Each structure stands twice: as C-alpha cells, then as structure tokens.
Image (cartoon, rainbow, N blue to C red; front, side):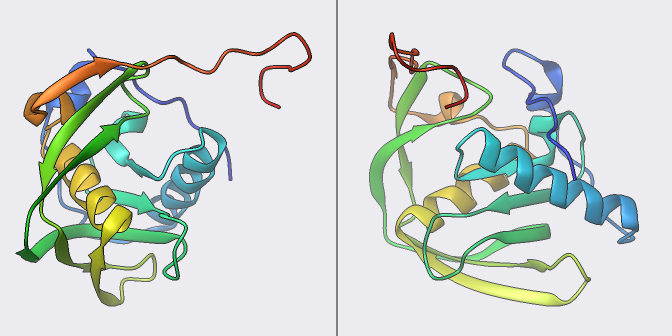
Length: 165
C-alpha cells in the first residue's frame, strides 16, 4: 500500500464523470487500499478515485463511527430522507469550506472490495461523507453546490511542531 498524490482544484479530472468498475482486479483492490492510506495520511473522512487522478467509481469513507473504514465500488444513493445544511471541506480544495445542503439520511448500495453487494444506511457525518464522495464521482465539487463558501486557516506548524507531526 502507498500514499497517492491528491489532485487539487482546478485539475480537469475533478470535473469529469468517473467510469463504472466492471471487473474487480487486484489493481482495483490495491487502489482502494492506497486511497484509504492516502485519506488517513491527509486526515480526511473520505476520498474518491478522481481525487487521486483516476476516473473510476471508487470511494473510501471513515466517519469514525461503528461502520469503520468503508471501501466501496460503484456506490449509488438509492434512498434519501430529510435535509440539513452543514459545513464541508475537501482534500482537493485546501483552505476553503462551504455550507452545503444535503440529505440527512441516505442509503447507499455498492460492492465491497471483494465484489460482494453491500447496503449501508447512514446519518450524520457518514451520510454527508457518502454524498460528498459520490458527488466527486459525478464531477461535482462542494464549491459547485455550496450556499456559502469561505476561507479557513490551514494548520501551520508552530514553533515546536514539525510538519507531519
């Protein structure tokens, strides 16, 4: 497993629709594993394959809840309920956050890394993360749909901290 470079806005790959995965190969599984490592290294909650420059319908999400790390192939939202406005950021758009209106609860279907069908119903941060990452697969960034976008301070190393600490 390895850390991939996260593609930054305005790279064109972030605005394209990712292709469905038709065959789960060892390369697809390795990409999912690398995406998880990359997400954790960047201290993110989710990552979509286009964010590492690959137009495949793959996401990884870990909202720090009972579901743990979710690696999903060809995810799709099959049901949604409610609505809430909340803050979002993105590893591909450092320094910006936005207030985005999302469904409060979603049910997502897809395949796990072995090709087994999985269905997850999510609320809270996991629901928001699923919607955010699936948007990436459709070439949509949070800045495209945010009601308000604002700058946030990037963490800077203090006098006794090193980058990466």
